[in-house]
Image 1 (tube, rainbow, N blue to C red):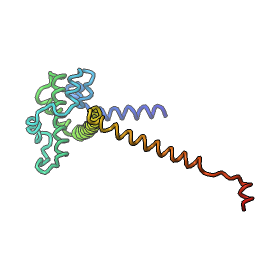
Image 2: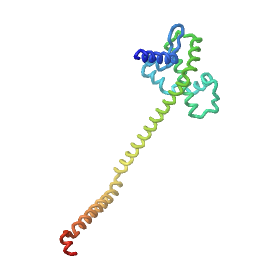
Image 3: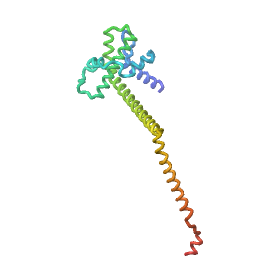
Image 4: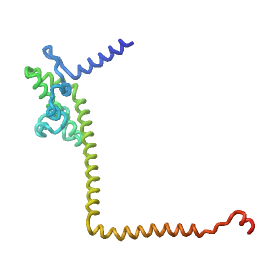
Length: 205
């Protein structure tokens, strides 16, 4: 049983590597750019993960290269943004492959690009969509935090004004007197309430 589970695990890894790599001249080339993470410094890793590192003009020039089947005039803005960011991932991945495998010729790079277009297109789109949602959530949280800080800052500045303090003193005094007066009336009414024992009440009846 343990052997069967181990074999299934190895088959899963092998199947995943078939999509994430390609063998050229006996050398394994990773198609998944994140598999190069051990060889990336912090700046390169940020360049890979953050959209917007490649110009819009360059991305537009490569639309038909990676999405020849799509008429971009009929795409919704959200879908167009996801596919543009996916093209950016294609370009970044090819640049990483060329950097770490400088011996590859033009024909081999074209072979790599064709397999990437088949195996990585949907994966790139899913990763980009997830990245956009994460960034949108962070922006919303930042806006909410900024709004809270501005609200408390404006209140603090308003309360520190001399005119505000002068206006609040009578108001606080009136509120204090009203509270004290209400408490005094309540106490007086309780102390004035006659007390009759049950025996006396029976005798009166």
